[in-house]
Length: 177
Image (cartoon, rainbow, N blue to C red; front, side, top):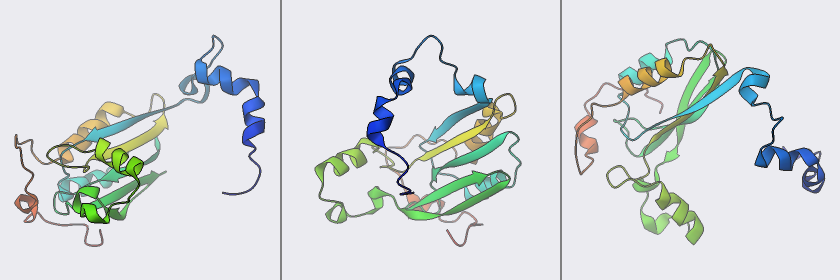
């Protein structure tokens, strides 16, 4: 935010950062102190658009915030951004998956290329579902949310090649994505 209020040198001099980083006997975990918990949902199969749209219409008790990226079976080149803030869930296009970008257009920086390649799967490239959910301990139901999202994925098919054309026929409730 560039407010000028944070001083890294001063923060490093504070005794609590070191204790927090390396653990200490009196540490109170955030879930106990604030009643908040979180988890990240990961998957490597694409979402069926209609099923994911149904998920978006379903209340998520205890979820305070969620954010991440996803990919639709009908749009294998696009990264979608998913966000929940309170009761409002939104999706929007974020850009292209690196696997959909010709390598000649990738950044020249070797470190950036290595980070991109580190996320690659032999079948799907860097396409993946990766969403963090933050919510109230005891109210947010991780198992329920995970099961709902797993039902949104295309049926599991053992394959060594991903064919995006196999899913182009699916109904598309996200025309703006």
